[in-house]
Length: 362
Image (cartoon, rainbow, N blue to C red; front, side):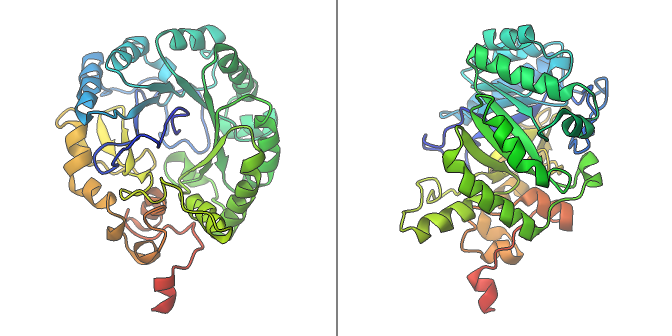
């Protein structure tokens, strides 16, 4: 998830400091989601970072300096981490803004969410992949998940904590997206993010939408966004920015400050970084190639100076259409999808239909 409170207004060079750090605090989860990146299991596997290792990792984040990144506790299900409150207290005490993405299981209660808020959590994330319980629960693998998700949205609103709802975009969910949009309009959320499937983990068993279908969905989203009562964003579809920017230019508007930023826009490994339950540092949870481990090397050092991240920070290092695209600084394509499709994180994103001028001229 993006942190619902995440602000791009603060000056931040994504080559130096990420906007969001995602920490998979555990690989355990009671759900069996069809698209689970983590291929989560019911109980915590051996080798996860201990409490002390987790605290040391959190303390190391101070070395990014100001502005500090936002921190997202993810999983698996963070509620299955026995020391979750202790780790949140450590992070909040360090001055980090903390979001949590609990799974919609019986553990997720109003009391549990209230306690997280009392410990200083400033945002929640949850998933809603269909407009009906039957469809959503079929994707999540557990009956009752839909009802729990709707209830959790109400609890977040009661607690006054911003909520981000994530929705899967795949062949199985595509036709239902307009109905999901109507449903989330009623939930009082802060942000709706459409996650375009990456074929990793259990997600390899689902069928992604085609590039032309993705473009049509993003055009629909751009049409719908101005009338929706929350922020709209995408996950693993950075070319949504190209859609928005080209529309703005067509209407004579100037590019946004974020689009024009010299360090470019957020994408896998640039503005976001993922730390697995075992401490491996990856560009994102959907690009499972580790550049190091926080048990052996600080996240700051890995993010700023490892060979993989140095290359991911520079859109000019990309190959194929993404490498010559005039929108590469604003978009850069999904590095995770490029990796899943080709084995290289630097190739073109196959879900984008755009033909760059340079490519067309060659």
